[in-house]
Image (tube, rainbow, N blue to C red):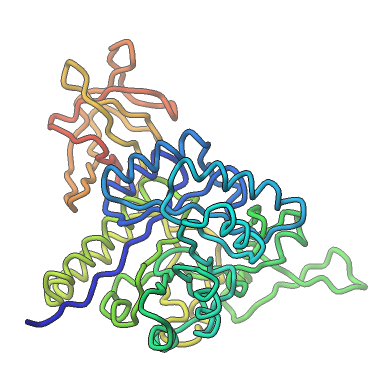
Amino acid sequence: MEQRIRLPELLVPASSLEVLQIAVIFGADAVYIGGEAFGLRAKAKNFSKEEMAEGIRFAHAHGVKVYVTANILAHNEDLDGVRNYFQELEQMEPDALIISDPGVFQIAREVLPQMEIHISTQANNTNYGTYLFWHQLGAKRVVSARELSLKEIREIRDHIPDDLEIESFIHGAMCISYSGRCLLSNFFTGRDANQGACTHPCRWKYAVVEETRPGEYMPVYENERGTYIFNSKDLCMIEHIPDLIASGMDSLKIEGRMKTALYVATVARTYRKALDDWAKDPALYEANLEWYKEEIGKCTYRDFTTGFYYGKPDHETQIYDNNTYIKNYTYLGIVGEMDGQGRYRIEQKNKFSVGEIIEVMKPNGQNVSVQVHGIYNEEGEAMDSAPHPKQILYIDLGMPLDQYDILRRKEE
């Protein structure tokens, strides 16, 4: 009997408890989250201790793992806090910690000797010697540097033990600096990217000022197209699932711990279906390629690139003329529980109105166009529209809905 290649894990980010639930329902095998300290996304909402415990319980009840980021490059004053933080995490029972700093790694091994540790991409993991180093110290998984090609990842797989896992980013924003080790944010704003406070100056527009001509700005052109010289396109490997699997990756990682539930649902659902289709029959995956590409384009994104996977990127991987995202759909809300009158609770995210045609996005891949029949406030009073963000509403779309369905509207 022919042995099938094992399907890699689909690892999805979550910025909040609500987004974690969506990631789980829409197809993640594992979710990575940050607490209120020691992660590299300090500007993300992140999880309180109570939310983290609830999120881990929810994920585990659905057979999904949770990894907690503690991947700052620590300074002296961080170390005592790290130790206390790990002691608190022990009660919550996450499935792994994501760490980049050797000192933080050592504390984790002391405080949580049974905990799985994954080495963050921030540790610049570019060769199999580095993987073997971390494995000998007790790491279970190493996240590859984003500067590696598929050929290099395959070579790493061939030189490391079978029980050491490879995790790689396969979708999302790309950092202009080597493995995300950027000093621009610290230099310009005093906010340290390596301590979780990046202000993303790589997306800014740049000019040169000559010393004797203050105030005279000369544009910086890499070519005639513009001056956003550090602004990378987003990584997208949805068209290359067979190559990712053949490379020996154990976990396919989506970037985006500051993204909305709509983004997370769209990307998780699309990669979930692509992986499952390939597992059923590679011909089915090939037949559905256009659907995957169409769906992945329904979330907010920059133009797409394959990054370093097929060789070093050239000028075509940069966006020179603007720093804005492409936005084809607007996020309206997540369907909650049904009330006694057949209406569904939502917390409204953007304005929509009675009579509008919107779309119900379901975890199984269905997109259902519906008309808004009714909108009601918490007192049961009918409303023409839902104008106030975060307002609790009850809606009638003229059809049964499921909890965690997502509502969105196509923009013309």
